[in-house]
Amino acid sequence: MTLSKPLAALLFAGAILIAGATVAEALHGAEAAKDRMGHMKALGKSSKAVFEQVKSGAPDMAVVKVEAGKIALASRQLPSWFPPGSGQKAEPKSHALPVIWTDMAGFETKAKAFAAAAARLDAATQSGDAAAVGPAFHDVGAACKGCHETFKEKDKT
Image 1 (cartoon, rainbow, N blue to C red):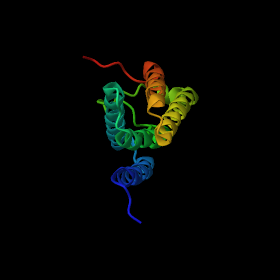
Image 2 (cartoon, one colour):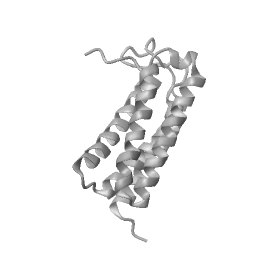
Image 3 (cartoon, rainbow, N blue to C red):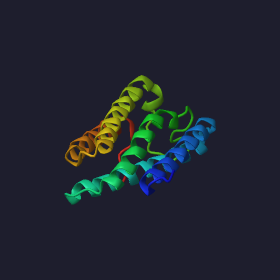
C-alpha cells in the first residue's frame, strides 16, 4: 500500500507529536517550558498555514487536511504541556501565567473548548468541505483567544 504525500506527512507529524507528548510528561521546570514553547510555535505554524489557505479563497485541501490534523492532535495534548513548575519562574521567556496552575480547572475547560473546535476543523477538512473550513478555523481562533486572554501573558512589544 502506498500512502499519499499528505497522508504520510500527517502520520509522520502525528508520530512526532505523540512522542513529544510522552517526552513532555517526563520533563520538568525549564525543560518542560522550553518543550511547551516549541509545541506552541509548531501549533502557530500550522494555524498560520491554515489561515493562509483560507485567506486564499481557494484552499489547497491537502495542505489544510495535514495542518488541521496537526492542530487537532496538539489540542488534545495541550494540557500535558503545562506540568507544575514549568512557568515563568522556571523559564522567564515563557508567557504562561501562574493562573494556569492556580486555576487548572478553568485552564482545562478552555483547553477542552480548543480541542472541540480543533476537532470540528479537522472533521470539516477530512470531509473535503472547503466552505466549512473558514468558519471552523474561525472557531479555533476564538478558542485560542479565549484561553490566551486569561492564561497567557500579553506580548511585551
